[in-house]
Image 1 (cartoon, helix red, strand yellow):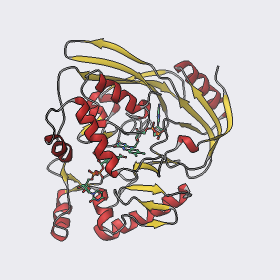
Image 2 (spheres, protein in one colour):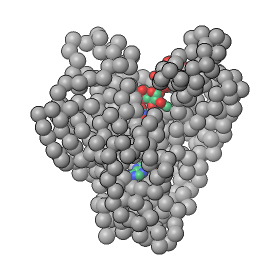
Image 3 (tube, protein in one colour):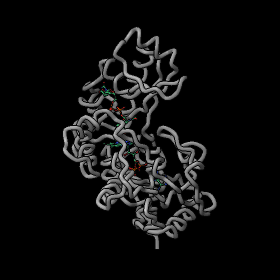
Image 4 (cartoon, helix red, strand yellow):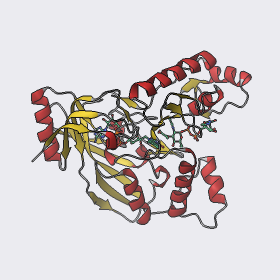
Amino acid sequence: MIQNQQNFNLASLNTFGFDVKARNYIACHSPQEIKEALSWVNNKQENLLILGGGSNILFKNDFNGTIIHPLLNKIEVNKETDEHIWLEVEAGVVWDELVEYSVNNNWFGLENLSYIPGNVGASPVQNIGAYGVEVKDCIEKVKGIYIDQQTNFVFNNDECQFGYRQSIFKSELKNKTVITSVVFKLNKKERFNLSYGPVKELLDDQKAISLKTVRQTIIDIRKSKLPEPEEMGNAGSFFKNPVICINDYTLLKEQYPDIPGYVIDDQQIKVPAGWLIDRAGWKGRSIGDAAVHNKQALVLVNKGKASGQQILNLADAIIDSIIEKYNIKIEPEVNVI
Ligand code: FAD
Ligand code: EPU
């Protein structure tokens, strides 16, 4: 039986720590409860938000509608061979608990994505990525429910249309689905991805590379630059890294010889927005309690009592200054509600 809680405080359900409320809040513990909640919302013609851990969301105001919070939390083995294991993981499982569980079982694939906040259900939405790996590399299927008809879907990896911080759930099907579980295909045979320079450098100092040392190295790197949301509200990278054409990059390189770039193909290159923002002089600057983190310029932080609108005002000032200085328009990664 679902239960609707009115005027629900969301302070602990958004990592910016904004003191906002939802008119209605329904926690769901099974796909059946999600369907019940969806039909209630559809009947009332309410605004709807599916919430995971709230680590990639910025609330501008109180949410004038219903929040459905999938808290289903089973992990099941679907299939196993000598080489692989297929895990079906429900949406409410905390992402990093899944990573830790797979590392403890000696299954390879998710370790570079250690310590990313949030829940499994959101992981395909923006195709979470870090340190040379994206979650799409391990996803076999995504299962869920269409919001309008409350019917089930199962998408294979191709159908999810994954890209850099992109998927069908963020584009064509934005706000049209609830993801209920994800099937991951993990390796039982050793296979590391050490393509990200700083990870390799730190690991070179260690005698033996194992899943546990890779996980710990990544946690250490992340702790050295990213603020803990409990200590300072934030949603990770506020902007996506812009992808620009090689010709524009060559021109920028003449002016800024040390500008980094990661080649995507013979036409395009990805430029770190953190570098652009840092070099434009924003690192550590604040407008009231809305600030640019002093160790990672891509992260905007709430130093105390900033509102969502104040963070957005700071973001707009940064966007304008990056256009003015480099003629590049950076776009938010965070979902503004
Ligand atoms: P939420 O913020 O609750 O939701 C995000 C979006 O997904 C919303 O649009 C929501 O409606 C939708 N959604 C959530 N659950 C479902 C569901 N079950 N069905 C359908 N839609 C759903 N991200 C990275 O990619 N790489 C990083 O390295 C990284 N580092 C971070 C570091 C910090 C300190 C923080 C605070 C954030 C970081 N992030 C990173 C961003 C964030 O952790 C991820 O985007 C994460 O997947 C969000 O999960 P969540 O459960 O908190 O989603
Ligand atoms: N840089 C600076 N100054 C800064 C920040 C970065 O000069 O203040 C430079 C760094 O020196 C480096 C480059 O920018 O040359 C890239 O920095 P970093 O390795 O920290 O990664 P990022 O591009 O800023 C991306 C993801 C992160 C992910 C890391 C690690 C995006 C939008 N962000 O950050 O994801 O953890 O790589 O792979 O792609 C997130 O999505 O929330 C997130 C934290």
